[in-house]
Amino acid sequence: MIGVGVYTHGDFALHNQPGHPECADRIRAIHRVLDARSREFRGMNAMPFAPASMTELAGVHSIRYLERLQDFCAHGGGMLDGDTYVNEYSFDVAALAAGGAQQAMRDVLHGDVKAGILLARPPGHHAFADHAEGFCLTNSTAIAAFEALNNHGLSRVLIVDWDVHHGNGTESLFYDDPRVMYFSAHQWGIYPGSGKLTDVGLGAGSGYTVNVPLPAGTADEGYLGVMDHVLEPIADRFKPEIVIVSTGYDAHWRDPLAGMGLSLMGYRKMTDVVMRIAGQHSGGKIVAVLEGGYDLDVLSIGVGDLVQQLSGSEPTGVDPFGSEPEDGATLERVGSIVDRARILHNLR
Image (cartoon, rainbow, N blue to C red; front, side):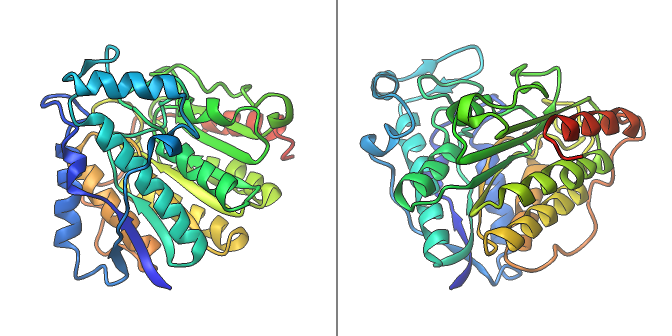
């Protein structure tokens, strides 16, 4: 087995609209940091992958949606909604991202890499089965999960979504599916306005969706309280065979599209928690999928730290941006939410 597999491609920059928060500069910044740190990342390996086929995409998304999206892009693209754009390359780029998600899952489950990191764009966790939303076209996290469930026989997939925005698309795809435990810690009161504490799944999937909506300003200690007292006991009960992380860096206090207080040191500690869960239950198997993050320095350094941690070494140096501002959400408010989540999910 080689070290960490990184799944990325220069073509991810072709989906682009200058001036939009989710633009090609995001992936370019990540590539610059990875190139600069390449000597430190002796366990990092650039892995080959191919675009997902229309048939493979249709395992998650409706064929009618896919055909309409492909046609719209072929005619030059435009705005799908008030936030989400496409251009002539966007459908092919989304298919490439989906293919990277599938290949990362295959390689991790086959033991070819110890962990897989999909560094693709556009992000995916707001993409529903039948429509795009929130900058997202196809749902790479869901595609990776369905690869594990449908093609590798797994029956317990844990998705940890720490993007600052609730992953409404991912939640919808697994809301009644007990094979997937979907966990999201997100800022309450911003887009998309979903992810209530009491949204816990439906039918056979009841109890397998865990939402922890947090107040603006929640910082490192609050997030780690959620990870320690909600996520870990949920994972211990569920015993996942694979862990997928929707890794958004927009809960950082510098991010321009949100209002949380995480630091890069906080992200490192959350990564430690996820690695501990995977080490205990899934033989260390992790697939990380890039979601949001719109401060380019935070995003690129955060991704570099993630690659280094998953390769088995601690990131070097101090957090270049420092800790969260002093006026973050009080721990009493976060603690109350944690207590309610524990009661709701029988974690007493």
